[in-house]
Length: 110
Length: 134
Image (cartoon, rainbow over all chains, first blue to last red):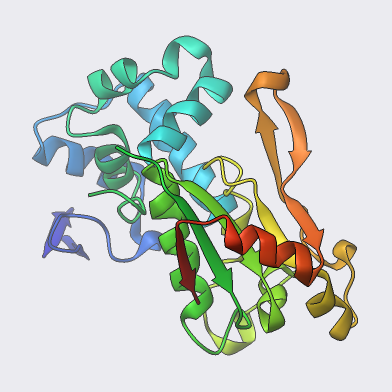
């Protein structure tokens, strides 16, 4: 599978996750969200950028429980709830946000 | 979901085989499902926790930074066998610092790595429900 943007093709796996992390950019994230019928606002970006930082530091995409806790610590307690994150990413915060962030599917995510 | 005590015993060096990385992934999955996870590092497995690993020359992913995420997953019982360290001329300071934050103690940062002798490790093994060897 692949995703097309500005005449270029980017390889994805069968669930739409980017195969090459280095392909990622803002426009690609926006395009992936659009394909799911979603629009990214600053709250989405906050989580997406958080995930990219987390991956950079630990080389993994965190499981949702870990993400929730870490977001609460970094971005404020009101944001560290599954309700808040599921409102932003209804298909599952770790799963959907990681996809837009260009990361692999989180370990332990089914 | 009933909680079981899982012990993952790591015996092999980090690179050259898939054991260390596979173990780490299974550990993270088990921890994500909120099982009680304990890790043990014995024999060449102690090399998995060495500081400043760089695998670029052999073209494999350096997954060492991922061990530092274990604290986030509430994996804070990490036992390293003293005899295995000594046999390899290593001390605890050669290992990367792994910590966790204790929610019940005002998020105090605490050490996850415990160096134990083989007799103590045997007792820890004795207390487990499920033991997985890598």
